[in-house]
Image (cartoon, rainbow, N blue to C red; front, side, top):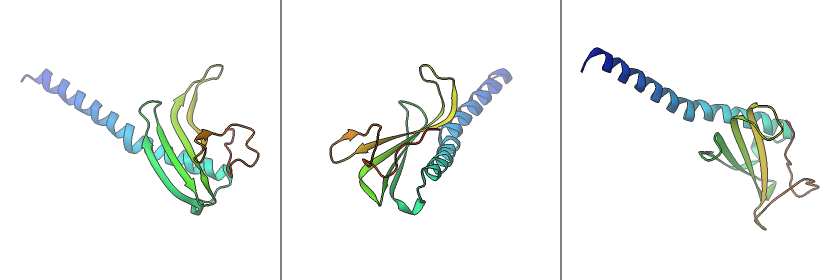
Length: 125
């Protein structure tokens, strides 16, 4: 194999490793940091978390953090972290965390106004 091919394969390997490291440990750490900040703004203590599952979201990008709280067992909270996103009529936003609350008993997503339907409603960031 000539020198040029070795350099190209080395560069390709570095790029692949870089993408893998970014997609998993780095992006996951960013998602967890954003999650901690979001629940602090909601006024939630971490000791109220009954279960927390962190899932790489390949469909929408970023990570999905599914949480059940000790004091709100009937609802599941889906915190979705995106490294960047743009929505119709909005500017580009980075490190975006959004929340969807699902009523597990009735299998429906709760919408505003939340008026007591869930203990920790979504906040505007």
